[in-house]
Length: 500
Image (cartoon, rainbow, N blue to C red):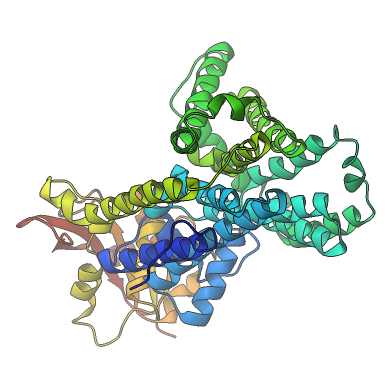
């Protein structure tokens, strides 16, 4: 049995590694069904492209590489995400060690990442691109602060690589390096780091990493930007003043929700030093504080400029992740004794995150007991087995009506190509039927016979299927770990192979 000494700073990285390993094991064990982002990754990992839609492709490229090496599986999907989260914590801790001599305090900064809801909660339910962005921010912080402390060609290269990865992970990451540059300019002794010739090397490296996707954006600007902008504007109509009010209120609420737990954890561990911490200042607290403020101010300007009214906490994760480091820098500047504090910080933290992990995992069992179901209860495996077991030949091509269904089916039929009718990587051309047996599948909201949409029918007709051959069939299988006779309905049809 692994025993962790919560008094030792070096032991904390092993505790974090053990936590993420448990996250992987539980996710693989609880259900073969996929969440939204998991289904999307299983689907798009079939294809290597310069762009896939409203999110940059770095995470997709990593997932494609993992699937190419190890094959498509729930383990391949889960390990990548939690490996990136672990690397996020690792480089965050290294960044803290560059600035903080107290190893216990640097370890608390690293553990502070685990107090962020996108890390200990949302990532255990469904996140992908944000996870890659959090890793990129931590890598950037390490390279950036190492450059300020002891500049070298390697540190500039590392910073440039981090910027390139970040821009390829989430578009809003661009605010972080921009804010970092602005934050350093008022510091006279560090300003020269920005105007060093090696900065050109860093920018060149970032440019090379971003260039392929930038070319794609120029030709697909609407596809790259429309999704997030529409989400930010959802839920309210009205004049610009009302939109500005609701957008600002939503942003403040998201900032509070994203930052309250780190603040509470540090306040509980240092209850009698809060005033000293608030008043303490150093060059590093000023720089880190400015980065956070500049980023959030930029988000506010974007909210007001776009008329956005709905801001999610996970969108702020790449900025709020700097908060634990900032708090630890304030504690360091105050010269507060940290003996015994690491244990007081880490034990309640691990109790909380393990409890949340168990709770998130247990919902597969507890939800049906309450008469409700979630995506992890949907019986994709039973459905595919039910409709393919009587066919001597497995489908060569599967056409689904959404990416989550497509990804979930691909997990069950890894030898088949899976596309969606409404956003396929390649158009439904007349020759697609010659690939072999074709299976068309769709679903509704769980009803025994989900409706076959007219738009779906029209796509198949455009692809060369005669309207008379479109004869929907249905299969209703028991929910995964469901109650009694509760069943989930799927629709499907087989398309005859086209004669050569």
